[in-house]
Length: 253
Image 1 (cartoon, helix red, strand yellow):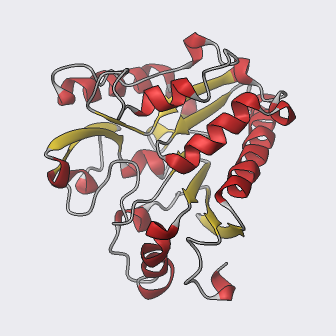
Image 2: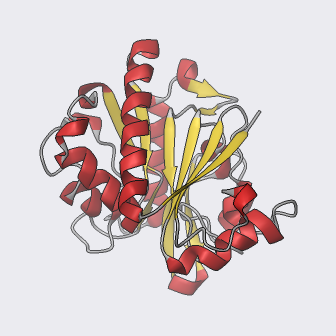
């Protein structure tokens, strides 16, 4: 059964530090429990702060990178050296110091001309890695999935009104996003909801109104993609900065 909690920090930097501390502890426990730690990464400015901390702050040198397998919850349909690439952002931050073995990084091949083929290839890679003993209800059992939330309530690359919202069987899809006139490769809700822990990192003034809609006005009447992230047997943890959470009542923060 899903457990949901919310935590507010004075700044985005303090939010990132809290996430880094939690992830390090979770990774260490996961390695002790089952020999490895599986983590799905998110794009965006708040995760960028987190990745830089994990790579450069000596406080997190005990992160078990050699036992950590990194995946991407979504990716743009662009080459890995493109400015919009989530992989490039991760490469320039988390991977910049060489702490993570190259073989432990599973990127989406966004450079493929056909977005559907890129999604299918990544789906195969996940199926190969997440053998039956690493699945929950037939879907990959990630230890942690990191997500953000857009001002429109999207998460990963599951946008309001997009076809990907309806997918219940496939693990990875090429989701056509009308406002960008292009596809995004993304995990589906069944994958997100099979995770042990989902962290939602939300910071900045452009998220304030949507956070109120998600957590207050439509709390019991879900209408935005991020609200359908409900781990079946896991935790959903919101980490927010004070600016993003400024319109939430105290009881919800």
